[in-house]
Length: 130
Image (cartoon, rainbow, N blue to C red; front, top):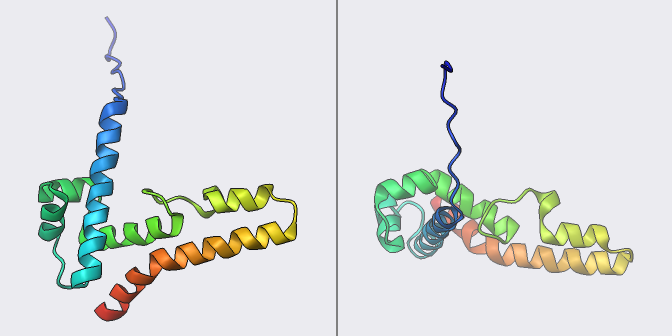
């Protein structure tokens, strides 16, 4: 008889997608509350209520308030629902594939503008919290 039983890893694409949607909803709610009420006035309970989830779900899916805000900054940089390392971001890959300097500069300028538009409101929240 074997000494240990091998456990099978359980993976459910449906459950993974539901978790991603829950996390995304929490971040959308948090961004809305932080940018309208400010960092100090926003509570995890308010974020949970706005997202339509339990407070424990917020902590399990994203984390504490400071982690939520950090994730908002990361997603603003990446332009996606997840934090993405710089070298894996779409605009970086496009720049690497482009051969002409003008194309690279245009891609970079568009990326910087888009990032600034996403980060701007969050920077104001940080400034006001200081």
